[in-house]
Image 1 (cartoon, rainbow, N blue to C red):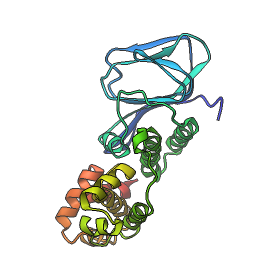
Image 2 (cartoon, rainbow, N blue to C red):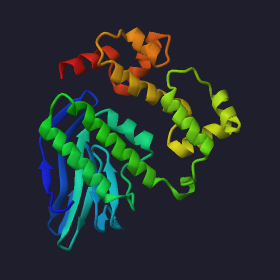
Image 3 (spheres, rainbow, N blue to C red):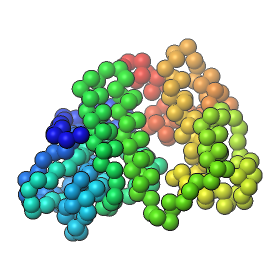
Length: 270
């Protein structure tokens, strides 16, 4: 994917938890440094396909930095022929996605795949241009999934251990049987581990606890079920494993940034 040079520099409100302020795909740059002592006031995720100076260090090619709002940004290269791909964004969803992906901020991460990031930005760019009723759901998924892929590559070497068959089976079970009651005791027993050992191993392998992973699957399915206006909120709560609709609604708002009713209203208005 070369000579793309696509840009989008106008704010777009995706939903109540995420917005995009600009995108640059393989933006060609002149020799020199960009120096912003106060940052840009929003989140900046920037990928450098060639070696550059980033802050006070010489970073190798295939580097990524995620700058938090208001933090010092400095990057560049004193020779011609370099480019970068970036997105400026805002919203409460982004810190949650970064936490789930175990990605650090204001830190140079190296040896990350370029084609993956460029492809994601191209897809987001196309969704912005299309901007139909589905774009507000597709765009956050594209960004979140891309960050999860980066998180997979950015893990420290001591975490890059093969996932055991038992842990992988449990992960798949949580995705398919998310509506079933489950306890950590049961999961640890299935994995043949003590509870503490199981919890540590699962988080090391997948970036979050088993219960957090289960909640993510439940909340994802709940958001999908909200599209069916014939289903009551209580019914949706039951279908994803919750008898207590108030507890369900509290978890849903924490995960999606709004109540189930508010998200349904937004979905139906698209």
